[in-house]
Image (cartoon, rainbow, N blue to C red; front, side):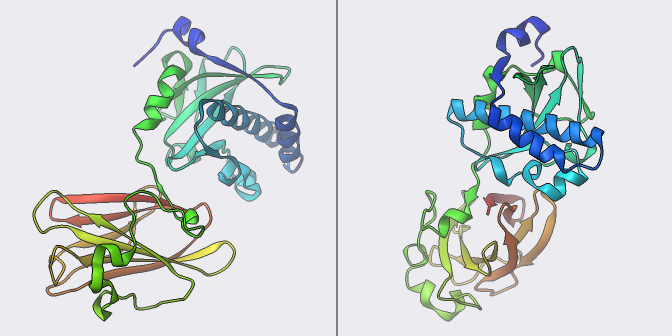
Length: 305
């Protein structure tokens, strides 16, 4: 929906820039090689801080320090101003100056974002005004008068499927729908055909029923986590038959997708396969999807470490 300038002004949100945000922005800027890059990082940091404070006021949880904008290496190389919304994905918080009519979107942040919020930073750096948001940035430039009003933002975010927080599993906090393996598979979970090829006393395993609404086509997705270091986890995925079935449906696929929904690795069931499995490592902050597909039906589960 396109709104006129007066409507945007009525729904813009002024946020005071806190002293801590100013100090943090200056700290990040001090490590940049040029004045131009320093100003870019400074304004990006103020925009991210303002959006973070706004979402917190709304009761929308965020993970301020895990985004690329808080990563010194990525911040140096790219023009990033992202803020992770817990369990949903990344919002890009793009700063503009008073009087700007458009907001350029750098090439490196035109993908892998759930939305873009435009933030006007005043000349004295005392106030940040959230002007509006856009779900996409396909043209590489946002026209400020065509932004969606911020009143629509909470409802827009509500449409996203929450991601499963795997780091919380290490603290034995599990989302609804994730059961113990024994609860869903019963005695099958203890049988060799349903066991993971590699086990560890430190592994945490949970199981979820995946179904497409057709009789006897459901399967069990088992996820096992094993810490490899303070920041790295080994993740093992396995599909098992349920509903009294002995074998998986032939041609059933288990696919690991990256943040851009590109396939990384996959496994496919053959005739009389009792399980298929994927094994990989990931680090804190990584986000990925698991797709279970059969014929023209598929289900996707979103995960974040």
